[in-house]
Image (tube, rainbow, N blue to C red; front, side, top):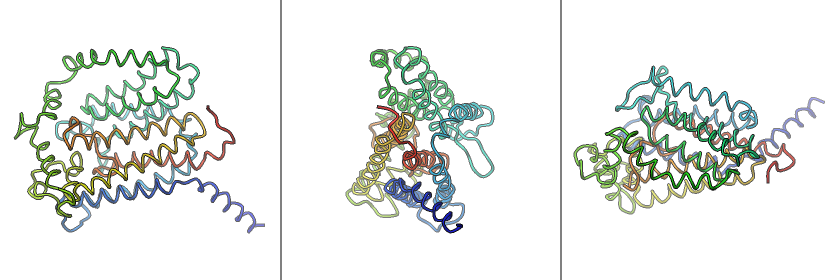
Length: 381
C-alpha cells in the first residue's frame, strides 16, 4: 500500500509540473548568465571575489531561484486572495522610503536591510499589477462604468505619486504602461481612453511647467541633446553612444570598449549596461540579446493565451508589458532615442531587488501554466 501511495503521489507531482515552460526557464537563465558576465567585465574583468558585483549578482540569482520555484508550486489563485494585502504592503514600503531611505546619487529609493539594499519600487511593480488585475477581474462586468475606470486609475496613481517623490520617473512610467495595457484589454469604454489620450498633451504641458522639478526638465532635454552639457549631464550619454559605435560588428571582447576600460562610461553595471555589452559583443551580441528578449516575451504571451481565468490572463499581459517596457526604455536611452530614466535592463542590470521581482513574476507565470489544468473550463471568453 505504501508503494502504491508513493507512486500515486509521484504521478500527481509529475502531472503538476508537466505544464512547466522550459523555454521560459532556459531563456531566463541565459539572460541572467549574460548579465553576470557583462557585470564582471564592467568591473574590470578581474579576479572574482566574494564582494565583487558579479559574484553578488550570482548570489542574488541563487536566492531568487527558490522564490521562482516556490511561486511556481503555489497556486496563483492564493496570490489573488492576498492581492489587497500585497498592495497595502507595497504602499507601506514606498512610504517608508521617505523616512528611512538611503540617498544614493541624489535619489532616495533604497532601504538598507543589513548587507542588502532593498528598492521597494521594484516589488511594488508586481504588487500594483496583482492588485490591478484583481480589481479588473472581480469587476469585469462593471468596468464599462466611468467610476471603475477612475478607481483603476487612482489605484495606480497612488504608488506612482510615491515613486515620483523619490524621484523615479522611470518606474512611474512602468506603472502607467501596465495600467494602460490592462485597461485596453478590459471592457472599459474606449471613449474614456480616447478622451484621456486627447487630454494628454495638455496634461503633459501642465506637468512640464508645474510638476517636474527644474533638474528633471533639464535631464529630459539633455537626453536628446547631450552636447548641450558635454562634460556634465550629457557626458555619459555621449560616452554610451561612442561605446556602442566602437563595438562594431563583433565587439572588443571581454575587456569591453576603451570607454569602459578608461572609466569614461559610468554606471555601466546598471543604467548603461547595454552600451557596455555592445562594446563587448558588438552588433551581433546586441542582436542575440534582443532575440533572447523576444523569446521570453513570446513565452509570456503564450501564458496569457492559455490562462484559465481573467486574473491570470491580465497578470500575464501585465508582466509582459512590464518587461518589454523596461527593456525598450533601457536600450533606447543607451542609444539616445529615449530619455535617461534609470530603468534597469531586465535580468541583466545589477541589482537584487529588480532580479527578485522578475523571478517572482516568472514564478507566478509558471504557476499559471502548472495549475491551469485544475480548471476544467475557460472562465472567460
